[in-house]
Image 1 (cartoon, rainbow, N blue to C red):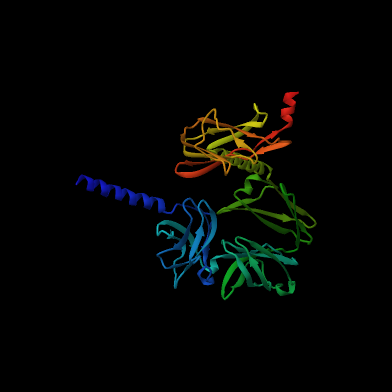
Image 2: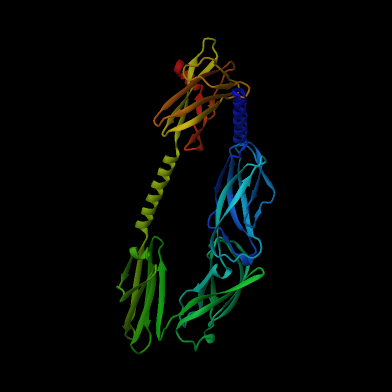
Amino acid sequence: MKNKLIFVTIVSLTILLVSLISAINLNVEKVSENEVLIPETGNPAVFTLKITNLGEPQNFEFYNLLGLRMFPVGKVPIGGMEKKEIELKVLPIGEFNYKGLYTFEYFIRGDDSSEIKKTLTFKIIELKDVFSVGSGEFYPDSNSVDIYIKNNANFNFENLKIDFSSSFFNVKEEFSLKPYEKKTITVQLNKEDFKKVMAGYYTLNANIKAGEVETDVDGVMKFLEKDIVTSTKKEYGLVVNTQTITKTNEGNVITKSETLIKKNIISRLFTSFSPEPNSVERQGIDIYYFWSKDVNPGEKFEIIVKTNWLLPLLLILLIVGIVVVAKQYTKTNLVMSKNVSFVRAKGGEFALKVSVILSSKKYIERIKVTDRLPPLVNIYERFGGERPSRINEKAKTLEWDFDRLMAGEKRVLSYIIYSKVGVVGKFALPSAVAIYEKDGKICESESNRAFFVTDQIRKGED
């Protein structure tokens, strides 16, 4: 009975060990962001995944249980320790009336039928909600006006056909829009078309055709009032942006001049006005400044708006620099340095002592250090410090294994190489590489390359 129990235990442990060995081991990282699905277009939501196979080479299949079509169809081969970037496309089957953010589960299955479960999220929006249109402010005597259309989604539109219409013009355009791209178009105005149109806000309509589907999007145009007062606007400077608006009364009566300038909550902090506006109004993130003044005949009313971006620019650069340095510093768990020194050999061979110094900044475990020997050299079999766990003379590699390194711990790995062939000039040694685990994640560190110049030997002898 006792022997039978031992046999069952051994078989169970063997099955468990085989399943653990054969189970897939993947690191899946989503590279893309803000994925969208626009059902009317029939195009899928596209995710870019960076997949690292930390286990044995296998063919992997992507599927889900929610009735979503997924591409690629079939199996994708990924070798052991190979990194592969995959475009995963998702398209609903049949009617899909959901709107907003949608999260779904999908599975990655290997050849051995083992699998892992992951989740992805995309946003479902209607075509009419993708675009926004509008125009710059313009006056009765303006010869042109700038209108724009913006793609507000992470979606690439090819060959859009757009019909812009308003009380002032009708124009057709055809172009492509990249994700989040804003296209500005200058439209020439014919004053006869709107000479009876009063000042105010008017609708700018855009009929947009994307392939076989179309939608209508409305925006606002501001047609500014201007009696007999002429207005000139100048803008210059990038870091210190200066905007000058001059109102000139060329008539013969006192005319009220009204000016409206919009700033956002960031730019207003660095903006000064001369003269100060008569009123300030906040609407959401936008701040509206309003000037009103009675201008006598022949008189000019000038408004100067200066926005100084120098201070915020320096602050942003400082913050970015600090973040980059801090991020780089925190990423490094194991620092490796490699140096080489000349050794006098009894037989007159060319010999060098190679030292690899490991400095652990944090607690790490399951460390494997690999160093490669350059061609035409041999390894001296006696070691002064840590002896390599494996020496592969054919592949010319040395390997050391450590269970763990504590934070602040240092290890020095040294060995001697020699060559019966004389070396002249610069002698290069490749970098040493360490693979280890930190908080359950596989990490890698690499040392510098070491160089030795044979002139150093001659100088030492002199």
